Length: 168
Length: 404
Image (cartoon, rainbow over all chains, first blue to last red; front, top):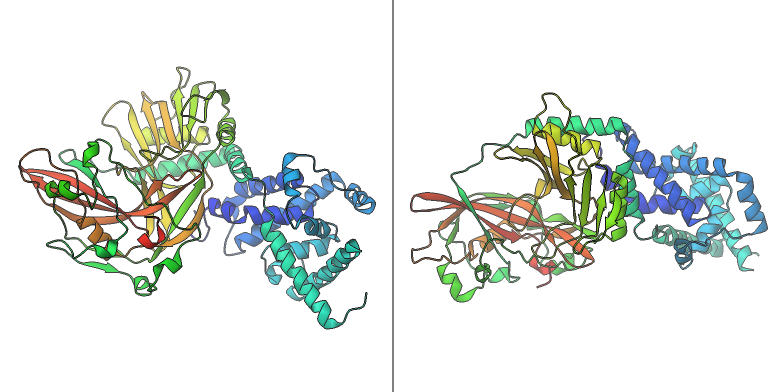
């Protein structure tokens, strides 16, 4: 075991919830979020022997895998369908017990709004509020730290406007 | 809507706080973490299994045990550590040195302010298998204490840490047991009393059990080989190699830190994987059962064929740091211990404790149970020319952070 590399069990314990929340803000349903989160950690588990702590933090490494998994999910399911649901304001199916339980979560509606933001804005909000620094956010989405800050603040304003429109 | 800059800033700040809360409170459904962890154990690729096997083999070669001290009988003395440590007086006669690290000097006056995030912990209530129930040792045992041995401390115990992690787990459900079995390729057969499930596979049967309250025992699995279980095909491999291969083939290689040793003194041969917890600033600390023996995973081999494997059920552990007693306090508790009363009229020989180490013990507590640090003292006493090894176990978590 690399001396700088924590046991994978520690990463799993520390980041499972955060990765799930990040994914949940990307996709529309809790069941999709569970599937993607499971794929993230199974991929990470198999690749952990190649993880080098001196190159990146465990958080940035895991969120990169999560971001790629979410993008794969959208590619597989078809971005068009998701956009259609958004335009038609159709709620995502949540007929499973877990989904119904999640209805009770106070901030579910807010995350649903985040999920409807343009892709880069959505990622900037989700990564930032998952605990990553702007430097880490920028590296993950391929821009500078300053650009990540600007993108985040634009996303925040867009989200505020969306929330206000929803309230009207 | 027109708002001035100040109002908009406040609204954005409020939105940021809501986002922080949203991301902080959005978590997968209960049980998802256990299910996923078990799935992950089941999908490990063959190269990784093989690597685990070789890694285990290497560790095994390095950790071949020393010859057992057959001439020395071991007697475990377990101490129920009363909360009022401060009432315990001075060291026993011949008390030796003890030192605490710099962290201890920074301990606040009111230690209760530093309770860990799990709240007050249950105090270990150790049982002592093999001892008459009436002789369960206690530091306030009254008249029975008159016949107890006198403990002294002559060693040096340095505890350079003021806190140590405490681990907590949810009691595994039948669903979690089923997931574990499924990942191994076993199917549910029945749910016998005392077990979460009994399962069958092509060449073995499996039973999974939850926490046992007394004597405290961790959730565990038991694999009983059928006659169809083949011998491990590894030319020239010793028992540890064979056990490693068997575990890797069944995706059961421990994911926790351990040392491994083989007891070849009888048939079947026993291969023990002793679990360790990493204590920052201290190092690895063994998980011990209530009788002081190391806990973890055991594989029994007969004629190169695995006949039984039993080990800790994989579980996700929460962790929180808790303040510890100092080395001095632990030693005072140990020397104040009252062991089992002697049965005969002969005087009880004094026990000279000389070694101490941090270990972990299971403390069952219903839906959630804990692995808590403890201090494991070892010493000797001599009677009629025969030297006996004795142990004293005292909880390490500060009494202010435990329930009485």
